[in-house]
Image 1: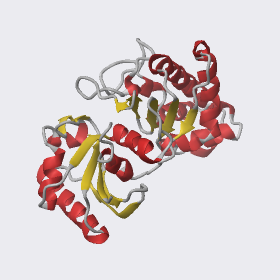
Image 2 (image 1 turned 180 degrees about the vertical axis):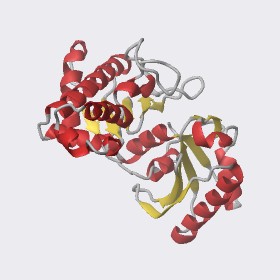
Image 3 (image 1 turned 90 degrees about the vertical axis):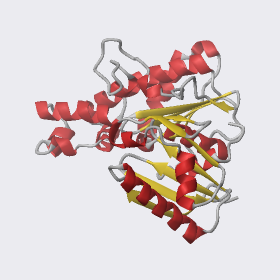
Image 4 (image 1 turned 120 degrees about the horizontal axis):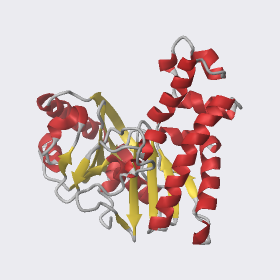
Length: 315
């Protein structure tokens, strides 16, 4: 079965044709236009180009940020540069671009990533699993009793906005002290850059003193793994909060496993080892280990996960 997969992001739109094994053929991408007319034109060209290169498809799946009504594929809330898409039905956009009727499934990008894990990754055969995507922010999705959790208005799984400190720092969502304000690429970079600006003793300060803004989350994890005391403090503080959040989620959902994806998951043991320790002691009353694993259906484009939405009739 060949499925068209589309990932709509704030900076790039990506598409490709995905086969039954989750392999992406004819991948392509374009910069995300800043207005509706430009978006529709670029969107249509991208989709038609993918199909022309890879052959016909039987269905399509679309992953997009924001709140998506999966039943109608309509975008309910999409803040930021893509706000002009609010109210649009993604199925209608795909069918209009291709000039034909075909089944189209759509959901937010984190649920698309979970659909990919169910189809081809760590959640295969699982009926209860959690996924957190760790990047610029923190996304999330849950499979509960074999079904994707969506909630009353599509907000189910927004784990990055769990309140970890009621009087904490303001979050982009309007709350204070959300998980994202402690653990995200942006939060980790801000903490480390602040230390560099202050001139704290660290290999990071020596390297980035002249340009603290170029310091990345990856640099912090690499310095921590190399034994830098400041970088280790930044990482341990962030992973401590994330570990507590994971434990709370484990107690609330009792999942078979928790999956971590996104760019920060590439940190490997520097991330997973302290998180597993936190998760183990905080969930002792479960009387079992809750496996914490890296996403296996890793697809940086998001295209395969989007296509998996069209496979997940049971989800």
